[in-house]
Image (cartoon, rainbow, N blue to C red; front, side, top):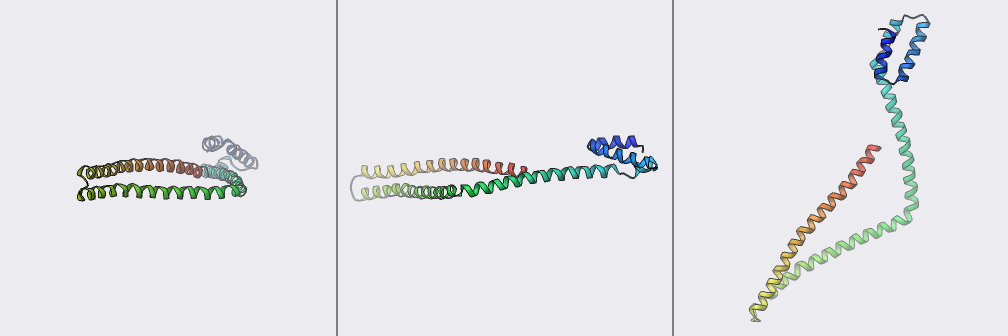
Length: 182
């Protein structure tokens, strides 16, 4: 293969600076007295291209690694300086979530027991001779509240499910972008 054909193929597979380097090396060896075809045959284009891509990838990874180290240092510094604010805020956030959970459990307990006691009270009123209309009214109110609670529970579960799905999509897509960037 001739020097020109070799360099043309090399330029197609690698960066032009790599081809320029090998053009100079081949020229120096030919000037030193070696045969051009022998010199060109001693180089493998595929191997040169693979080494070139490897060096480019390695350089890019080192550059990204240095950038990531800078960001990691800044994150640590910001975490240290923001700790006096973020730790109490985190504790307050956990306390609020805990309080909301206790309130939700309390509301659910009252919402379940109130209609049940209304139904039981209606049965007692009817059995005690206090009037059928009062007993039926209490039983109806209890059943109505239980039905509304069922409807509300289904609605609340759907809202919470969509909220969790939205939050997890936001969180995981952000993490995935960060992992790809790293």
